Image (cartoon, rainbow, N blue to C red):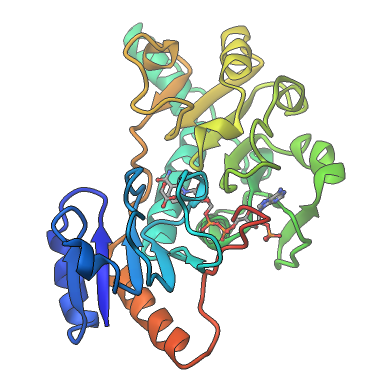
Length: 310
Ligand code: NAP
Ligand code: GLV
């Protein structure tokens, strides 16, 4: 059985992982495969496939997304219907995301924003120390990545809360579920970490009205997708000081346009969609296990619910 591959960046590490975890399968690179071969290929491994990627894939049985978010794949104009879509669950990203989130929380908790500003002005002043209880951290999205952040933050003693679609019971974490509980959740977040998928239900979730529900001087860490947040409203609240700080990895338009005010904003640290990357080894091991399960007629891990959008 063969695989068709189109990867984020250089295919070499993916091909190496495929050789390790699925040595018996022949791998074809998209763009270098003839029509007769394409028609026979059962499994496609993709990241943001080009518009004509699915042309001629008449025998496709499953599509494996080489990342966690499927928002781009689900809006592909030629996405085949009735073929399971399977995403990567963790795939090495949870640990990276947790490190990144911890950096952002400590930045706020230990006043590194104030300290950086003081350094620019050669000001020698101790901003003081807060108790962990004074930095309440909320996580929007309690999936593979949100739960990794919670486990990373747990030993620091920050009060933790989380919001998801279905109610989750997580020891030591105040959990909320559903749209009606969102205002109560937001009101408790001194630092809000966003790890939701982008779906019809979550697009623009952090609108101007919802951002205004955060406590005065709260901080935002968006690690998921830019379109979850109203960027103009976020900018307004940063400009006014209603929001203290934003650590942003994702944006409405990527790459972020050169003239975007976030680049030079004194209350923003930004990174180029680099908070976490799928690691080829664990991701391909997961896909190999999923294909084996699929061929035995057993359930796969990470199957996307197209109607839900994640
Ligand atoms: P996941 O395991 O599917 O978890 C998603 C979480 O969001 C679940 O807790 C889910 O609730 C919740 N959720 C979904 N829709 C909701 C809604 N309408 N209301 C409330 N909660 C909702 O996803 P993941 O693997 O943690 O990844 C999360 C996202 O991170 C990805 O979709 C991707 O966009 C982003 N990401 C970004 C990067 C980056 O480099 N910046 C890297 C990887 C991933 P339930 O628990 O009830 O299902
Ligand atoms: C990256 O953004 C991912 O969704 O895996």
